[in-house]
Image (cartoon, rainbow over all chains, first blue to last red; front, side, top):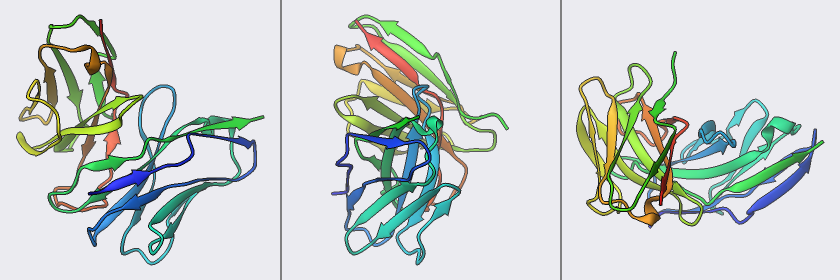
Length: 115
Length: 116
């Protein structure tokens, strides 16, 4: 069965510093995708970054990068130069292909950016 | 381009009642999926619709149902509400038609349902 584990319920970071949010996953599918979403207090899920299982390079999107270690089944999100507006819940999710398309979610990490 | 719109934003119901939530996807998107978010269980997949057909279904009782209209708008219905149905219900739309793992989902702000 597919599973996503986020072991950090809460994290603190100082403004302008970098922070790493952990995510490990479990799947037997050869083809899958890993996503990170941000959920501010407004409730909307905001897409941050995607990593495909066959991608050779780590994904980057602006200040967000994904540290993908396939052998360890980990997909950690790195946020560089944290901003106050980065304070939110962060969710790691995984999706298979074909009939296994639903997103499987971790329980999330609450990030607080301190001024 | 307008995002995913969910209505209403908040709902308060009592046990035993039924409720209908609405989701309008991004224009041109034909796939709509629904997720339930609770503090204890996190986010769980309810179902997915594509071109008015249910394509995937999660492990929820039959009290949870949905449908999709020809304009891709979707509704979700919960009958005989229970206290445990209190949750944030999120709708997501996507535009690609192929079953690709990298298909990005765009979410609405959700409907916060409280069952008293």
